[in-house]
Length: 409
View 1 (cartoon, rainbow, N blue to C red):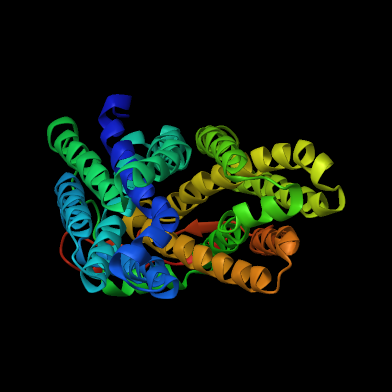
View 2 (cartoon, one colour):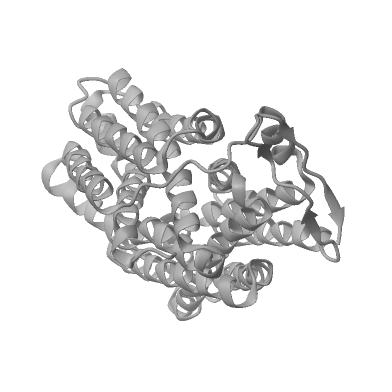
């Protein structure tokens, strides 16, 4: 039975806290560097360390916690996240803050896949996409509200105040999880061989490849959106804040629409449509530099709206695709997707850095379009092939490992 929306709000709040902390850090780097007496490059390593710890930790943690009852796992993860924010807020030096960021990453890597798996199981096959979108909505809402508010709080009260605020949000989410979520058993536990087989499955790898390339396209521009808009359209800080608000609102709407579309028309068609629309948005952004500063924004703003709508809606459908491929191993497959997302964000940011370093920020749209086009190729490679799960991964009641095979449908 699908749980009430209220029962999933606490997971949305937890995702909002995690998204706010993750996205706001980039805007705090100059203040962090000055206060801790380090350069901008070491301060930037706080972002790199978080991404790598999350990408590597998510699948490992999913394996280690596979037998834990789901509500307990969510509570432990959110407790660790709240504590790590307090540690960051009180950090006396760079090493302590780096340690806090690593703990934040591992806590987030424990919470997000488990929250998505919990929501998917609670929603059932009929409303799986909608349930997943409620969790993902927390991340998109972080872009809408958390990031702009984080900048304002940092400017008014210092960067440490942001970590105190996020710790409070995490504590509220923890209380809601303990009081408002029903217990959920761990479900079928995969054998080590079954887990390895899942990671090697061609259909799973194709879905993950789409996730990596889609997120790489997004972060190629998003990481340097301020530089891009300043060079192309002469947009200043206040204009950038408005653009980020528009992007965040579009992302939130896309998350919900993507879940609904996956339930109604299927996850794969939703990804194809979303990928095509995102590619169109990047191509329009690429044409902006030729319009001149005066005429660029009326063209770029609708493209940015479409970009946020399509890219976030696509990622919700991607989660639904993975869950459908191996429902019993949803926490493992979703943790792999989380790693793919962070690998994609690192790839996109690195690619964007190379473009910006060459002084040609106006070319960011073309690079993003290349990633977006590449993201559609795994979908085309899978066309005409229907993968049917013959047997479920896992162990039977007697502890004997069961074999899973795939065949063309």
